[in-house]
Length: 327
Image (tube, rainbow, N blue to C red; front, side, top):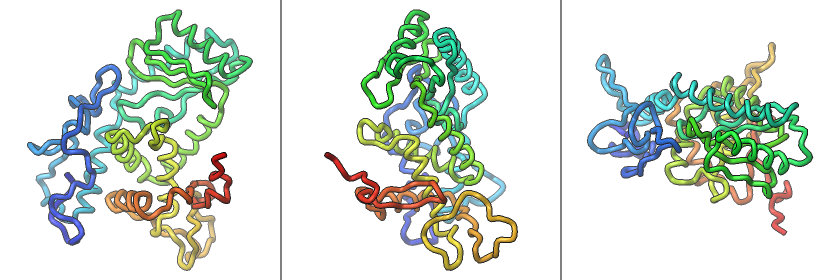
């Protein structure tokens, strides 16, 4: 765990700040690939009392860090690097995408397949699916596109466990690509997915803590089965929005004498007075992770208050935004 000798009485030596579950069940992808780099059972399943987790790195050249938050910061970095896709995993996904893309081009003369979500941003876990959208499909309705692609995938034997969801607000084809075992979700003629991916990529460049925090929290939710929207969980894009807004609105970025409306990701313009510039974001990933759980877990009234990352991050009244009308 990330706990250790403490100079803060709030945390004991036995605290496990990552809360990776003491007896988790094995977590593998649809083709049995373990979560992590060649580690059986996945990153969560290897937590045990017999030794450190597989992402742990010992540095004999220095004494272990004693401050819990520094140790947590270090372990978050190790974990984020551990679950980063290997070249083999990247090639496997690229090849699967190209096989699906070939079917799309054969089926829709003017259509093109674009990726979005975690695969487009690079923040995917080994168990993550690939979200795609067929743009300029030329079909009458999105449901027509779903049915046409479903037939084409069936004829080519490229898909298994296929599900055609035509009644949803955004109809999609869900299937497992036969050769790779990777789950695909394909929608039609909805351009906001790729646009959102571009925004997230820019946010990752301007807010470096975004990726390590996201992969840790995504796995935390996944282990507790809190990552599926249709079961009441938090989807990937909602989670990213929450993290971006949290980082934008973090107290360490507030300008002196400023209000709580947050700070834009754009750098201050040349000549901006120092008192109007944003301060440096809190550098400790440990502090940021604990602060994230504190904000969204106990401080924010999520039933009445929404959060957005446009314009530098903001909170808003759900009732005033018309989101409380359940009729």
